[in-house]
Image 1 (cartoon, helix red, strand yellow):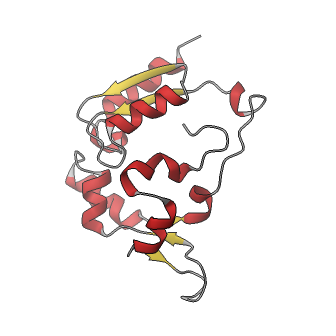
Image 2 (cartoon, helix red, strand yellow; image 1 turned 180 degrees about the vertical axis):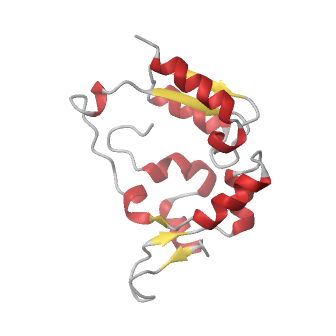
Length: 150
């Protein structure tokens, strides 16, 4: 849901602060090319991931997800996205809002929708950042509904 020329990180800037501040103060940075080189990624601690991503998900699903989690590469989220109407603008876009999301608050999600309106917005009550775990039936229903829109 980023706009042309926006960095994916900018979506989280209200919650995390500026990219520069995040890079200076974050204790979660990974220096894959050595400590003397710029950071290449970041990874939250397990407890933080649980609170941010899986606050409504069943514990067995969270346990499975935790063993699959990998560091998030910084490059793709720190670079401005060049998006054109000819390419990005031709794809149909829908937004599924997760109302109990702690990683991307409902207010931030509403802002994303206002600033870059999709064709439709669907909401899932009781869902965290990962509705495929926390509300799989609701997510399935919405995806089927989207697939049937002419």
